[in-house]
Length: 136
Image 1 (cartoon, helix red, strand yellow):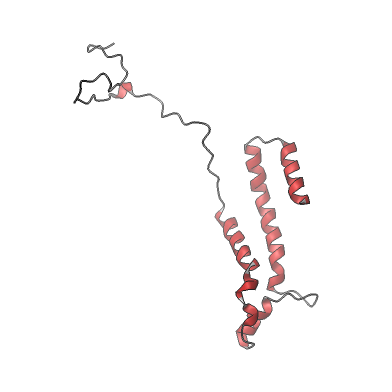
Image 2: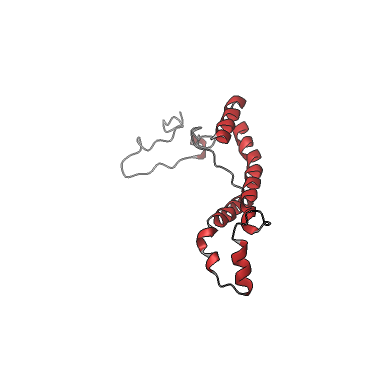
């Protein structure tokens, strides 16, 4: 207790009505405010991977853009030709979308597995999740 009878704890309930008690530095906790452990952990995003994923998604829906309706002249013909699937007569840009998607999945897997390891998820759970995702 100090000279005024205070116990060292800051309390506005004991202050006379109409007055404000000033908090002293010694009455504040030495540590910062306690953060509950139930708060979700912020996910770290990888901007280049997200941009690549977005590009692939745009290319996947590009069939609906109507490139095949472009006039058959000059550069327009070349663009329209790149968005037609060729069965066995060579590869065009449109045929490279699926391999690009698989490449993106392969690049993202180490990040996803590392996040599971940080959360101390058992290997059996991780492997069963991968197995069920692969099998459908």
